[in-house]
Length: 163
Image (cartoon, helix red, strand yellow):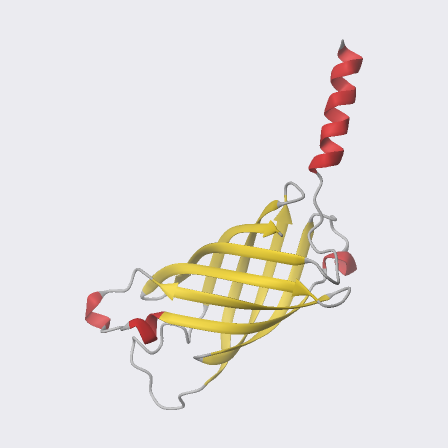
């Protein structure tokens, strides 16, 4: 009975193993909470592998927890970005379920960069975190607090899925 239990456990562990980034044709969907000064919100992103270590995608953030005195309308709360990632999980080779990806993004509010990491518990589900920072803001003047919502350092934490 113990041997049968051991075989079942070993077999299930081999099926549970996921891979963080598989290369060309790999697709990831991520959703999470976004945290920054004067707001918190929700972020969704989609990445598509175009090479062994390169992916392109889109991300969008909507700021929810904005104080009313900031005067932020929909345009201030919403941002969408095209993104480029260099998926380095297989280069660093910590674990096949772990990926770290620096990248660049071009959005409605700025040109910026991000550093993200994800870990898969199964072949379809994992967790991720991303640190985002603007490199160049499109408005070179002094930004109001509402305009600054997506022009500052932010952190995203959430779930990631293989599609």
